Image 1 (spheres, rainbow, N blue to C red):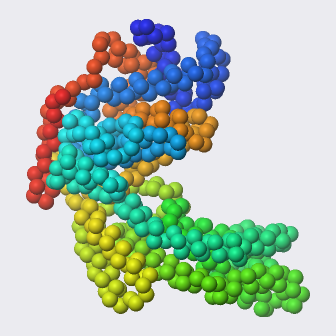
Image 2 (image 1 turned 90 degrees about the horizontal axis):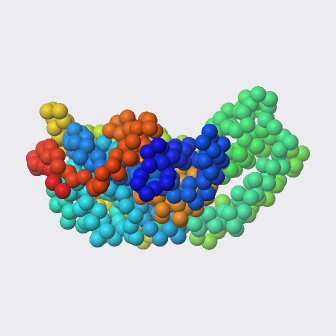
Image 3 (image 1 turned 90 degrees about the vertical axis):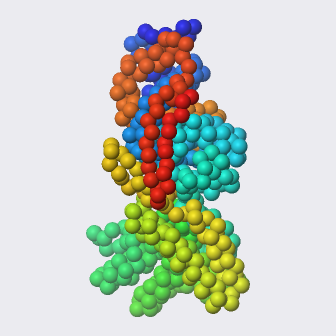
Length: 520
Protein backbone atom coordinates (compact mmCIF):
# COMPACT_ATOMS: atom_id res chain seq x y z
CA UNK A 1 0.00 0.00 0.00
CA UNK A 2 1.28 3.45 -0.90
CA UNK A 3 0.14 6.04 1.59
CA UNK A 4 0.89 9.74 1.75
CA UNK A 5 2.41 10.80 5.06
CA UNK A 6 -0.30 11.89 7.48
CA UNK A 7 -3.06 10.59 5.20
CA UNK A 8 -5.05 7.43 5.95
CA UNK A 9 -6.31 6.60 2.45
CA UNK A 10 -3.89 4.72 0.20
CA UNK A 11 -3.00 6.03 -3.24
CA UNK A 12 -4.24 2.86 -4.91
CA UNK A 13 -7.66 3.41 -3.30
CA UNK A 14 -7.66 7.01 -4.54
CA UNK A 15 -6.95 5.74 -8.06
CA UNK A 16 -9.57 3.00 -7.82
CA UNK A 17 -12.29 5.37 -6.62
CA UNK A 18 -11.36 8.04 -9.18
CA UNK A 19 -11.38 5.64 -12.12
CA UNK A 20 -14.72 4.13 -11.10
CA UNK A 21 -16.20 7.59 -10.64
CA UNK A 22 -15.01 9.22 -13.87
CA UNK A 23 -14.43 6.27 -16.21
CA UNK A 24 -17.45 4.15 -15.27
CA UNK A 25 -19.55 7.24 -14.42
CA UNK A 26 -20.66 5.82 -11.07
CA UNK A 27 -22.52 7.75 -8.41
CA UNK A 28 -21.24 7.90 -4.83
CA UNK A 29 -23.66 5.33 -3.42
CA UNK A 30 -22.71 2.90 -6.23
CA UNK A 31 -19.02 3.27 -5.36
CA UNK A 32 -19.86 2.80 -1.67
CA UNK A 33 -21.65 -0.48 -2.44
CA UNK A 34 -18.78 -1.62 -4.69
CA UNK A 35 -16.16 -1.03 -1.97
CA UNK A 36 -18.28 -2.70 0.68
CA UNK A 37 -18.71 -5.82 -1.47
CA UNK A 38 -15.04 -5.96 -2.49
CA UNK A 39 -12.70 -8.57 -0.90
CA UNK A 40 -11.27 -5.81 1.34
CA UNK A 41 -14.82 -4.95 2.56
CA UNK A 42 -14.06 -1.22 2.77
CA UNK A 43 -16.77 0.85 4.44
CA UNK A 44 -16.62 4.59 3.87
CA UNK A 45 -19.24 7.33 4.21
CA UNK A 46 -20.42 9.06 1.04
CA UNK A 47 -18.74 12.34 2.02
CA UNK A 48 -15.36 10.60 2.27
CA UNK A 49 -15.80 8.92 -1.11
CA UNK A 50 -16.64 12.31 -2.60
CA UNK A 51 -13.47 13.83 -1.14
CA UNK A 52 -11.36 10.90 -2.39
CA UNK A 53 -12.71 11.25 -5.93
CA UNK A 54 -11.92 14.96 -5.89
CA UNK A 55 -8.45 14.23 -4.50
CA UNK A 56 -7.90 11.93 -7.48
CA UNK A 57 -8.50 14.89 -9.80
CA UNK A 58 -6.20 17.07 -7.69
CA UNK A 59 -3.43 14.51 -8.18
CA UNK A 60 -4.08 14.46 -11.94
CA UNK A 61 -3.61 18.22 -12.06
CA UNK A 62 -0.36 17.92 -10.07
CA UNK A 63 0.82 15.18 -12.43
CA UNK A 64 0.05 17.45 -15.38
CA UNK A 65 2.03 20.29 -13.80
CA UNK A 66 4.98 17.99 -13.12
CA UNK A 67 5.12 17.09 -16.83
CA UNK A 68 4.89 20.60 -18.26
CA UNK A 69 8.39 20.32 -19.73
CA UNK A 70 7.32 17.16 -21.60
CA UNK A 71 4.16 18.91 -22.79
CA UNK A 72 6.26 21.82 -24.04
CA UNK A 73 8.50 19.44 -25.97
CA UNK A 74 5.43 17.74 -27.46
CA UNK A 75 4.08 21.13 -28.57
CA UNK A 76 7.36 22.02 -30.27
CA UNK A 77 7.39 18.64 -32.00
CA UNK A 78 4.04 19.61 -33.54
CA UNK A 79 5.44 22.92 -34.78
CA UNK A 80 3.60 25.07 -32.24
CA UNK A 81 0.13 25.30 -30.78
CA UNK A 82 -3.29 26.73 -31.60
CA UNK A 83 -4.64 28.37 -28.47
CA UNK A 84 -8.36 27.95 -27.84
CA UNK A 85 -9.86 29.54 -24.76
CA UNK A 86 -13.39 29.80 -23.48
CA UNK A 87 -15.37 29.64 -20.27
CA UNK A 88 -18.49 27.82 -19.18
CA UNK A 89 -20.63 27.82 -16.07
CA UNK A 90 -23.80 26.43 -14.56
CA UNK A 91 -26.80 28.34 -13.30
CA UNK A 92 -26.32 29.57 -9.70
CA UNK A 93 -22.75 28.25 -9.69
CA UNK A 94 -21.23 31.71 -9.24
CA UNK A 95 -17.99 30.65 -10.93
CA UNK A 96 -16.80 29.97 -14.44
CA UNK A 97 -14.48 27.20 -15.63
CA UNK A 98 -11.93 28.82 -17.94
CA UNK A 99 -10.03 26.39 -20.18
CA UNK A 100 -7.05 27.27 -22.36
CA UNK A 101 -6.21 24.39 -24.66
CA UNK A 102 -4.10 23.43 -27.67
CA UNK A 103 -6.17 21.79 -30.41
CA UNK A 104 -3.07 20.47 -32.23
CA UNK A 105 -1.60 18.39 -29.43
CA UNK A 106 -4.78 18.05 -27.35
CA UNK A 107 -3.09 19.33 -24.19
CA UNK A 108 -4.74 21.48 -21.55
CA UNK A 109 -2.49 24.52 -21.16
CA UNK A 110 -4.30 26.09 -18.22
CA UNK A 111 -7.60 25.47 -16.46
CA UNK A 112 -8.96 27.45 -13.55
CA UNK A 113 -12.15 28.60 -11.89
CA UNK A 114 -12.77 32.34 -12.23
CA UNK A 115 -15.53 34.67 -11.15
CA UNK A 116 -15.99 36.16 -14.61
CA UNK A 117 -14.42 36.41 -18.07
CA UNK A 118 -13.36 40.02 -17.66
CA UNK A 119 -10.32 41.53 -19.33
CA UNK A 120 -7.99 41.31 -16.31
CA UNK A 121 -8.90 37.68 -15.63
CA UNK A 122 -8.33 36.62 -19.23
CA UNK A 123 -5.09 38.59 -19.44
CA UNK A 124 -3.69 36.90 -16.32
CA UNK A 125 -4.55 33.44 -17.68
CA UNK A 126 -2.99 34.21 -21.08
CA UNK A 127 0.18 35.44 -19.39
CA UNK A 128 0.51 32.12 -17.54
CA UNK A 129 0.25 30.23 -20.83
CA UNK A 130 2.74 32.57 -22.50
CA UNK A 131 5.31 32.11 -19.73
CA UNK A 132 5.00 28.32 -19.92
CA UNK A 133 4.64 27.65 -23.64
CA UNK A 134 5.55 30.80 -25.55
CA UNK A 135 3.50 32.45 -28.29
CA UNK A 136 0.81 30.45 -30.09
CA UNK A 137 0.58 30.09 -33.85
CA UNK A 138 -2.98 31.43 -33.68
CA UNK A 139 -5.65 32.19 -31.10
CA UNK A 140 -9.29 31.11 -31.46
CA UNK A 141 -12.00 32.48 -29.17
CA UNK A 142 -15.56 33.78 -29.15
CA UNK A 143 -16.60 37.43 -29.43
CA UNK A 144 -16.67 38.48 -25.79
CA UNK A 145 -15.56 42.04 -25.21
CA UNK A 146 -11.94 42.30 -24.13
CA UNK A 147 -10.77 38.98 -25.59
CA UNK A 148 -8.99 40.53 -28.57
CA UNK A 149 -7.57 43.33 -26.44
CA UNK A 150 -6.21 40.86 -23.87
CA UNK A 151 -4.56 38.73 -26.57
CA UNK A 152 -2.89 41.76 -28.15
CA UNK A 153 -1.64 42.88 -24.74
CA UNK A 154 -0.04 39.48 -24.03
CA UNK A 155 1.01 38.09 -27.42
CA UNK A 156 1.31 41.25 -29.52
CA UNK A 157 -0.36 42.16 -32.80
CA UNK A 158 1.55 39.62 -34.92
CA UNK A 159 -0.31 36.62 -33.49
CA UNK A 160 -3.45 35.92 -35.52
CA UNK A 161 -6.68 36.05 -33.52
CA UNK A 162 -9.59 34.22 -35.18
CA UNK A 163 -13.09 34.81 -33.88
CA UNK A 164 -15.24 31.67 -33.90
CA UNK A 165 -17.40 31.77 -37.03
CA UNK A 166 -20.30 30.13 -35.23
CA UNK A 167 -20.29 32.69 -32.46
CA UNK A 168 -20.12 35.45 -35.06
CA UNK A 169 -23.20 34.14 -36.87
CA UNK A 170 -25.05 33.83 -33.58
CA UNK A 171 -24.62 37.57 -32.98
CA UNK A 172 -27.38 38.01 -35.60
CA UNK A 173 -29.87 36.10 -33.44
CA UNK A 174 -31.69 39.24 -32.28
CA UNK A 175 -32.60 40.05 -35.88
CA UNK A 176 -34.74 36.90 -36.00
CA UNK A 177 -36.21 36.57 -32.52
CA UNK A 178 -39.09 39.14 -32.54
CA UNK A 179 -40.61 37.96 -35.84
CA UNK A 180 -40.08 34.28 -35.06
CA UNK A 181 -41.72 34.64 -31.64
CA UNK A 182 -44.67 36.51 -33.19
CA UNK A 183 -45.22 33.80 -35.83
CA UNK A 184 -44.94 31.09 -33.19
CA UNK A 185 -47.47 32.87 -30.97
CA UNK A 186 -49.99 33.17 -33.81
CA UNK A 187 -49.74 29.52 -34.80
CA UNK A 188 -49.65 27.96 -31.33
CA UNK A 189 -51.74 30.32 -29.17
CA UNK A 190 -54.18 32.06 -31.53
CA UNK A 191 -54.72 29.40 -34.16
CA UNK A 192 -53.79 26.42 -31.94
CA UNK A 193 -52.40 24.83 -35.08
CA UNK A 194 -50.16 22.24 -33.46
CA UNK A 195 -52.86 21.14 -31.01
CA UNK A 196 -55.49 20.91 -33.74
CA UNK A 197 -53.30 18.83 -36.05
CA UNK A 198 -52.39 16.50 -33.18
CA UNK A 199 -56.08 15.92 -32.37
CA UNK A 200 -56.86 15.17 -36.01
CA UNK A 201 -54.02 12.66 -36.18
CA UNK A 202 -55.16 11.03 -32.93
CA UNK A 203 -58.68 10.63 -34.33
CA UNK A 204 -57.19 8.56 -37.17
CA UNK A 205 -55.34 6.08 -34.94
CA UNK A 206 -57.70 3.27 -35.95
CA UNK A 207 -56.95 3.98 -39.60
CA UNK A 208 -53.57 2.69 -40.73
CA UNK A 209 -51.76 2.86 -44.09
CA UNK A 210 -51.76 -0.25 -46.24
CA UNK A 211 -49.99 -3.30 -44.85
CA UNK A 212 -46.26 -3.36 -45.46
CA UNK A 213 -45.98 0.44 -45.66
CA UNK A 214 -43.79 2.38 -43.19
CA UNK A 215 -45.33 4.33 -40.33
CA UNK A 216 -43.69 7.60 -41.44
CA UNK A 217 -42.79 9.09 -44.81
CA UNK A 218 -40.14 11.80 -44.65
CA UNK A 219 -41.10 13.97 -47.64
CA UNK A 220 -44.27 15.18 -49.31
CA UNK A 221 -43.02 13.69 -52.57
CA UNK A 222 -42.98 10.23 -50.96
CA UNK A 223 -46.57 10.76 -49.74
CA UNK A 224 -47.69 11.80 -53.24
CA UNK A 225 -46.04 8.70 -54.67
CA UNK A 226 -47.84 6.59 -52.06
CA UNK A 227 -51.33 7.81 -52.98
CA UNK A 228 -50.65 7.46 -56.70
CA UNK A 229 -49.64 3.86 -56.15
CA UNK A 230 -52.31 2.83 -53.61
CA UNK A 231 -55.19 5.38 -53.95
CA UNK A 232 -55.39 5.22 -50.14
CA UNK A 233 -56.80 8.66 -49.27
CA UNK A 234 -56.97 8.18 -45.49
CA UNK A 235 -53.48 6.68 -45.36
CA UNK A 236 -52.07 9.62 -47.33
CA UNK A 237 -54.01 12.04 -45.09
CA UNK A 238 -52.47 10.43 -42.02
CA UNK A 239 -48.99 10.58 -43.56
CA UNK A 240 -49.48 14.27 -44.41
CA UNK A 241 -50.53 15.18 -40.86
CA UNK A 242 -47.52 13.36 -39.42
CA UNK A 243 -45.24 15.09 -41.90
CA UNK A 244 -46.53 18.54 -40.91
CA UNK A 245 -46.21 17.79 -37.18
CA UNK A 246 -42.68 16.49 -37.68
CA UNK A 247 -41.55 19.98 -38.74
CA UNK A 248 -38.55 19.98 -36.41
CA UNK A 249 -36.77 17.41 -38.57
CA UNK A 250 -35.83 20.37 -40.79
CA UNK A 251 -33.81 21.79 -37.88
CA UNK A 252 -30.18 20.94 -37.21
CA UNK A 253 -30.46 21.49 -33.45
CA UNK A 254 -28.21 24.55 -33.51
CA UNK A 255 -30.98 26.96 -32.55
CA UNK A 256 -31.90 30.39 -33.86
CA UNK A 257 -30.73 31.83 -36.26
CA UNK A 258 -29.51 28.56 -37.79
CA UNK A 259 -32.95 26.99 -37.32
CA UNK A 260 -36.36 28.67 -37.57
CA UNK A 261 -38.68 25.80 -36.61
CA UNK A 262 -41.96 27.72 -36.69
CA UNK A 263 -41.21 29.13 -40.11
CA UNK A 264 -40.69 25.49 -41.12
CA UNK A 265 -44.04 24.59 -39.51
CA UNK A 266 -45.83 27.31 -41.47
CA UNK A 267 -44.26 26.27 -44.77
CA UNK A 268 -45.09 22.61 -44.14
CA UNK A 269 -48.66 23.47 -43.22
CA UNK A 270 -49.17 25.50 -46.41
CA UNK A 271 -47.77 22.71 -48.60
CA UNK A 272 -49.59 20.01 -46.62
CA UNK A 273 -52.93 21.85 -46.85
CA UNK A 274 -52.67 22.04 -50.64
CA UNK A 275 -52.00 18.31 -50.78
CA UNK A 276 -54.85 17.42 -48.39
CA UNK A 277 -57.30 19.67 -50.25
CA UNK A 278 -56.35 17.96 -53.50
CA UNK A 279 -56.74 14.36 -52.31
CA UNK A 280 -60.11 14.99 -50.64
CA UNK A 281 -61.42 16.80 -53.72
CA UNK A 282 -61.44 13.37 -55.39
CA UNK A 283 -62.96 11.59 -52.37
CA UNK A 284 -66.61 10.74 -51.82
CA UNK A 285 -69.04 13.00 -49.95
CA UNK A 286 -69.24 10.70 -46.93
CA UNK A 287 -65.45 10.60 -46.49
CA UNK A 288 -65.17 14.36 -46.88
CA UNK A 289 -67.84 15.00 -44.25
CA UNK A 290 -66.37 12.48 -41.81
CA UNK A 291 -62.68 13.36 -42.13
CA UNK A 292 -62.04 16.50 -44.17
CA UNK A 293 -64.64 18.75 -42.49
CA UNK A 294 -62.72 18.93 -39.18
CA UNK A 295 -59.51 19.80 -41.02
CA UNK A 296 -61.33 22.52 -42.97
CA UNK A 297 -62.78 24.00 -39.77
CA UNK A 298 -59.35 24.07 -38.17
CA UNK A 299 -57.76 25.84 -41.15
CA UNK A 300 -60.42 28.57 -40.96
CA UNK A 301 -58.86 29.65 -37.65
CA UNK A 302 -55.67 30.57 -39.52
CA UNK A 303 -57.51 33.46 -41.21
CA UNK A 304 -56.60 32.36 -44.72
CA UNK A 305 -53.11 31.18 -43.73
CA UNK A 306 -52.35 34.44 -41.95
CA UNK A 307 -53.28 36.80 -44.77
CA UNK A 308 -55.97 38.38 -42.59
CA UNK A 309 -53.98 38.16 -39.33
CA UNK A 310 -52.73 41.67 -38.42
CA UNK A 311 -48.94 41.85 -38.72
CA UNK A 312 -48.48 38.19 -39.63
CA UNK A 313 -47.64 38.56 -43.31
CA UNK A 314 -45.29 41.44 -42.57
CA UNK A 315 -43.41 39.41 -39.93
CA UNK A 316 -43.32 36.38 -42.22
CA UNK A 317 -41.85 38.29 -45.17
CA UNK A 318 -39.24 39.98 -42.97
CA UNK A 319 -38.25 36.64 -41.43
CA UNK A 320 -37.87 35.01 -44.84
CA UNK A 321 -35.83 37.98 -46.08
CA UNK A 322 -33.42 37.99 -43.13
CA UNK A 323 -33.03 34.21 -43.35
CA UNK A 324 -32.17 34.47 -47.04
CA UNK A 325 -29.32 36.89 -46.30
CA UNK A 326 -28.20 34.88 -43.30
CA UNK A 327 -27.86 31.79 -45.50
CA UNK A 328 -25.87 33.84 -48.01
CA UNK A 329 -23.42 34.73 -45.24
CA UNK A 330 -23.20 31.09 -44.16
CA UNK A 331 -22.34 30.16 -47.73
CA UNK A 332 -19.69 32.90 -47.86
CA UNK A 333 -18.08 31.41 -44.74
CA UNK A 334 -18.30 27.87 -46.20
CA UNK A 335 -20.71 26.81 -43.46
CA UNK A 336 -23.87 26.39 -45.54
CA UNK A 337 -23.16 23.02 -47.16
CA UNK A 338 -21.55 21.58 -44.03
CA UNK A 339 -24.55 22.47 -41.88
CA UNK A 340 -26.94 20.91 -44.40
CA UNK A 341 -24.87 17.74 -44.64
CA UNK A 342 -24.78 17.35 -40.85
CA UNK A 343 -28.43 18.01 -40.00
CA UNK A 344 -28.68 14.82 -37.97
CA UNK A 345 -25.67 15.68 -35.81
CA UNK A 346 -25.78 17.41 -32.44
CA UNK A 347 -24.84 21.10 -32.24
CA UNK A 348 -21.17 21.87 -32.65
CA UNK A 349 -20.33 18.24 -33.21
CA UNK A 350 -17.65 18.92 -35.82
CA UNK A 351 -14.75 21.33 -36.11
CA UNK A 352 -15.61 22.43 -39.68
CA UNK A 353 -12.04 22.83 -40.84
CA UNK A 354 -11.28 24.89 -43.92
CA UNK A 355 -9.03 23.71 -46.73
CA UNK A 356 -6.13 25.90 -47.83
CA UNK A 357 -8.04 26.94 -50.95
CA UNK A 358 -11.11 27.94 -48.93
CA UNK A 359 -9.01 29.88 -46.41
CA UNK A 360 -7.39 31.87 -49.24
CA UNK A 361 -10.80 32.71 -50.72
CA UNK A 362 -12.41 34.00 -47.51
CA UNK A 363 -11.20 37.66 -47.64
CA UNK A 364 -12.32 38.08 -51.25
CA UNK A 365 -15.69 36.41 -50.60
CA UNK A 366 -16.39 38.68 -47.62
CA UNK A 367 -15.65 41.75 -49.74
CA UNK A 368 -18.01 40.49 -52.45
CA UNK A 369 -20.69 39.96 -49.79
CA UNK A 370 -20.28 43.52 -48.51
CA UNK A 371 -20.64 44.86 -52.06
CA UNK A 372 -23.84 42.86 -52.54
CA UNK A 373 -25.26 44.41 -49.35
CA UNK A 374 -24.38 47.86 -50.66
CA UNK A 375 -26.20 47.16 -53.93
CA UNK A 376 -29.25 45.84 -52.07
CA UNK A 377 -29.35 48.94 -49.88
CA UNK A 378 -29.46 51.15 -52.96
CA UNK A 379 -32.47 49.24 -54.32
CA UNK A 380 -34.45 48.61 -51.13
CA UNK A 381 -37.14 51.00 -49.89
CA UNK A 382 -38.45 48.89 -47.00
CA UNK A 383 -37.28 50.49 -43.74
CA UNK A 384 -37.13 47.19 -41.83
CA UNK A 385 -35.03 45.57 -44.52
CA UNK A 386 -32.73 48.58 -44.71
CA UNK A 387 -32.20 48.49 -40.93
CA UNK A 388 -31.38 44.77 -41.06
CA UNK A 389 -28.95 45.15 -43.97
CA UNK A 390 -27.15 48.04 -42.29
CA UNK A 391 -26.73 46.03 -39.09
CA UNK A 392 -25.52 43.02 -41.08
CA UNK A 393 -23.02 45.20 -42.95
CA UNK A 394 -21.74 46.77 -39.72
CA UNK A 395 -21.25 43.38 -38.06
CA UNK A 396 -19.29 41.97 -40.99
CA UNK A 397 -17.11 45.08 -41.28
CA UNK A 398 -16.46 45.13 -37.52
CA UNK A 399 -15.18 41.56 -37.34
CA UNK A 400 -14.01 41.07 -40.93
CA UNK A 401 -10.28 40.93 -40.17
CA UNK A 402 -10.80 38.40 -37.37
CA UNK A 403 -12.87 36.15 -39.64
CA UNK A 404 -9.91 35.63 -41.98
CA UNK A 405 -8.11 32.31 -41.54
CA UNK A 406 -4.40 32.53 -42.44
CA UNK A 407 -2.29 29.72 -43.85
CA UNK A 408 0.72 29.21 -41.58
CA UNK A 409 4.06 27.75 -42.64
CA UNK A 410 5.83 25.84 -39.85
CA UNK A 411 8.81 23.52 -39.69
CA UNK A 412 8.12 20.01 -38.38
CA UNK A 413 10.93 17.42 -38.34
CA UNK A 414 12.99 19.68 -40.58
CA UNK A 415 10.26 19.96 -43.22
CA UNK A 416 8.07 22.94 -43.96
CA UNK A 417 4.37 22.24 -43.49
CA UNK A 418 1.33 24.40 -44.21
CA UNK A 419 -1.27 24.58 -41.43
CA UNK A 420 -4.79 26.00 -41.56
CA UNK A 421 -5.97 26.96 -38.06
CA UNK A 422 -9.46 25.95 -36.89
CA UNK A 423 -12.06 28.67 -37.42
CA UNK A 424 -14.46 27.64 -34.64
CA UNK A 425 -14.21 26.98 -30.91
CA UNK A 426 -16.06 23.69 -31.30
CA UNK A 427 -13.06 21.87 -29.84
CA UNK A 428 -13.74 23.43 -26.44
CA UNK A 429 -17.52 23.52 -26.80
CA UNK A 430 -17.55 19.76 -27.28
CA UNK A 431 -15.34 19.28 -24.21
CA UNK A 432 -17.63 21.40 -22.03
CA UNK A 433 -20.67 19.47 -23.22
CA UNK A 434 -18.98 16.15 -22.44
CA UNK A 435 -17.90 17.34 -18.97
CA UNK A 436 -21.44 18.38 -18.06
CA UNK A 437 -22.95 15.14 -19.35
CA UNK A 438 -20.44 13.18 -17.29
CA UNK A 439 -21.16 15.22 -14.15
CA UNK A 440 -24.91 14.73 -14.57
CA UNK A 441 -24.42 10.98 -14.79
CA UNK A 442 -22.00 10.87 -11.85
CA UNK A 443 -24.13 13.07 -9.60
CA UNK A 444 -27.63 12.10 -10.73
CA UNK A 445 -28.55 15.80 -10.86
CA UNK A 446 -29.77 17.77 -13.86
CA UNK A 447 -28.42 21.02 -12.36
CA UNK A 448 -24.78 21.14 -11.33
CA UNK A 449 -23.95 24.33 -9.38
CA UNK A 450 -22.02 22.55 -6.59
CA UNK A 451 -20.41 19.81 -8.68
CA UNK A 452 -19.28 22.15 -11.45
CA UNK A 453 -17.97 24.71 -9.00
CA UNK A 454 -16.01 22.02 -7.15
CA UNK A 455 -14.29 20.11 -9.97
CA UNK A 456 -15.10 22.09 -13.13
CA UNK A 457 -11.45 23.17 -13.39
CA UNK A 458 -10.01 19.76 -12.41
CA UNK A 459 -11.91 17.27 -14.54
CA UNK A 460 -10.59 18.61 -17.90
CA UNK A 461 -7.04 17.66 -16.89
CA UNK A 462 -7.96 14.02 -16.35
CA UNK A 463 -10.20 13.70 -19.40
CA UNK A 464 -7.50 15.02 -21.75
CA UNK A 465 -4.61 13.13 -20.13
CA UNK A 466 -6.00 9.60 -19.83
CA UNK A 467 -6.03 8.85 -23.58
CA UNK A 468 -3.17 11.13 -24.65
CA UNK A 469 -0.05 9.49 -26.07
CA UNK A 470 2.14 11.35 -23.61
CA UNK A 471 0.31 9.93 -20.58
CA UNK A 472 -1.21 6.72 -21.94
CA UNK A 473 1.36 4.38 -20.39
CA UNK A 474 0.68 5.89 -16.97
CA UNK A 475 -3.11 5.80 -17.16
CA UNK A 476 -3.32 2.35 -18.73
CA UNK A 477 -2.33 0.73 -15.43
CA UNK A 478 -3.79 1.74 -12.07
CA UNK A 479 -0.70 0.59 -10.15
CA UNK A 480 1.56 2.74 -12.31
CA UNK A 481 -0.75 5.70 -11.81
CA UNK A 482 -0.73 5.20 -8.01
CA UNK A 483 3.08 5.08 -8.07
CA UNK A 484 3.20 8.31 -10.07
CA UNK A 485 0.95 10.00 -7.53
CA UNK A 486 3.19 8.75 -4.73
CA UNK A 487 6.33 10.10 -6.45
CA UNK A 488 4.87 13.59 -6.33
CA UNK A 489 5.02 13.39 -2.53
CA UNK A 490 8.18 11.32 -2.15
CA UNK A 491 10.05 14.59 -1.80
CA UNK A 492 8.99 18.14 -1.21
CA UNK A 493 7.14 18.58 -4.49
CA UNK A 494 7.13 21.92 -6.25
CA UNK A 495 5.64 22.79 -9.66
CA UNK A 496 8.40 22.25 -12.23
CA UNK A 497 9.97 25.10 -14.13
CA UNK A 498 10.28 25.07 -17.90
CA UNK A 499 13.99 24.52 -18.35
CA UNK A 500 13.89 23.13 -21.88
CA UNK A 501 14.69 25.64 -24.60
CA UNK A 502 13.42 24.29 -27.92
CA UNK A 503 13.07 27.15 -30.40
CA UNK A 504 10.82 26.48 -33.37
CA UNK A 505 10.53 29.02 -36.14
CA UNK A 506 7.50 29.48 -38.35
CA UNK A 507 6.48 31.85 -41.09
CA UNK A 508 3.20 33.58 -41.79
CA UNK A 509 3.19 35.70 -44.94
CA UNK A 510 6.80 36.65 -44.43
CA UNK A 511 6.52 37.53 -40.73
CA UNK A 512 8.97 35.54 -38.65
CA UNK A 513 7.56 33.97 -35.49
CA UNK A 514 9.65 32.41 -32.78
CA UNK A 515 8.28 29.99 -30.21
CA UNK A 516 10.57 30.12 -27.20
CA UNK A 517 10.18 28.20 -23.97
CA UNK A 518 10.89 30.74 -21.29
CA UNK A 519 12.76 29.71 -18.19
CA UNK A 520 10.52 29.76 -15.13
